[in-house]
Amino acid sequence: MFDQNKKFKFNPDLSGVLSNHMSRYSLVRATAKRAREISEEAEEESIILVEKPVSIAIDEIVNGEYKIIEPDEIKNI
Image (cartoon, rainbow, N blue to C red; front, top):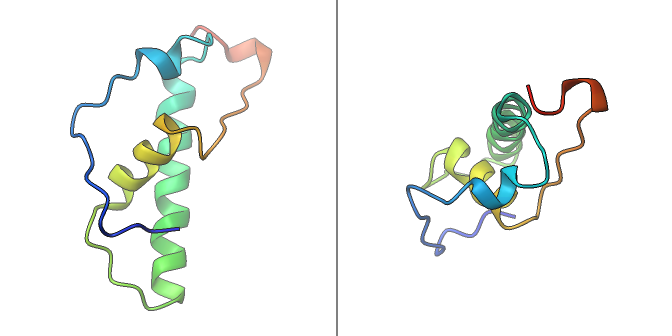
């Protein structure tokens, strides 16, 4: 789950993530939610994270490892 050897790009190109009509609001909410999950899982398993949970969450979203499903009524906000 947490690859400590992975290099994270600090300014990932999010246009590919947002190209499927996802709103920025959904992206921010999903990133925050996943970052909290990562942080809680690391704490429960006594794992010391080298990267910040938000960086790991963004990396997972950009790589398609974490899928964001948003309701139709909030798309393109």
